[in-house]
Image 1 (cartoon, rainbow, N blue to C red):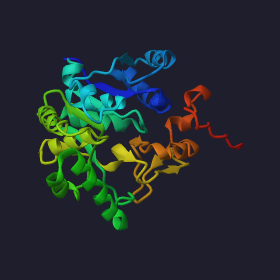
Image 2 (cartoon, rainbow, N blue to C red):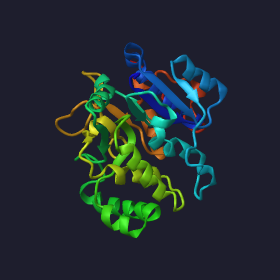
Image 3 (tube, rainbow, N blue to C red):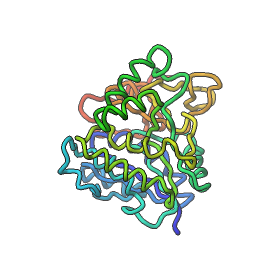
Length: 296
């Protein structure tokens, strides 16, 4: 059986971030012969051509649930709802790595760690929890209220009561063996979710329910899916890498630039792969500008 595959999805609005993801994995993909696929959620031809030039296959977005007919559907959701079906959509691989378009691999062992877990027969994911995150301490109560609303909308009040206080399992960075039992359970939970109007979090909440109590899930430290919207990482100039802002200041392995309203901040802080040096003026959507480089 061929080796692992990396899968992502993007439209033209997130192309500038997806470029960083692609480039941050390029050396490892070429060295180890790892296939990468991007589902096209609305790229223009030039953008799709750029992906092809970086050894990324651009494919039409699948719709295994016929989701376009569902209440609450929005086109970007095709990049979410396909995830439980990856072994069927892209058969023939021993492990499936999903990386959101707004992530990038900051250290080689970011991708390497995911694959190590998958080769051991476990599914890898990250809980949304870290002492430095803004969702802890005084903010724990509003965070729980947010999740109570999200659970109620997607699965109803009983789910809201049961799960509101449990840290979320984020589905933006995953590695799952092809033969893992999580796939079937995830599909079953998603089938329940789509009985209600779709929400932005329907797929992730279905993943949480599927994965929560399984013993064959490896819950990785936050450095493997550092959610910058909860706490920006710190730049260590001497080491030339992003690190967690709290002791022991471990290197960030995979940086997740989540939160659309924060993207201008990420851009100005050069929190992108290679500081955003790969960006060209035409890459950025309206309202975003390349940061001015400071003279040394």
